[in-house]
Image 1 (cartoon, helix red, strand yellow):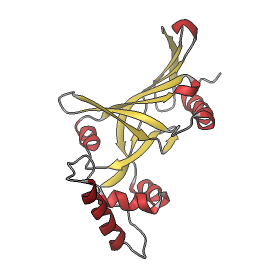
Image 2: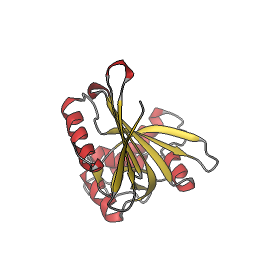
Image 3: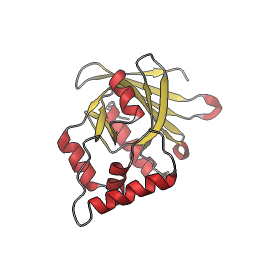
Length: 193
């Protein structure tokens, strides 16, 4: 048993990758606007290390607006087949341009073009309108590289709390809570189920 929450997360994620049928890196991202109204949606984890948990998105989206208004978020990983979940809470900030450029370059071309075509979270008149914008982006970048749009980047959640929840019989679950005490140190305790 490890006392390093990042190592424990890596182990649990590896087990989820081996058993979850779809998107083991899916996580619920909870944000709140400036007056505290919550919002939650699924996003994909695209990187994780001691600095935090990284995902990418359109910076003109609703989630980005809420992040700008309230710089603290929560994440939830739920691996149903493993009967486990991990909760993460902490401040959020942008990744570097170099990180965003590198990840964007690794995406499938159609995903890159989709980032140019989508006004994420804004009203859409019809599916056909979006498909026309996609085709226009395809024509615009035909024969060349697709650069990262200026409104598309990533965020890193720097965890202050990480809770590991393991299902047990009769709802006698196991909950381990790690709380950050410094840049490199954590305290660990158990929570009642």
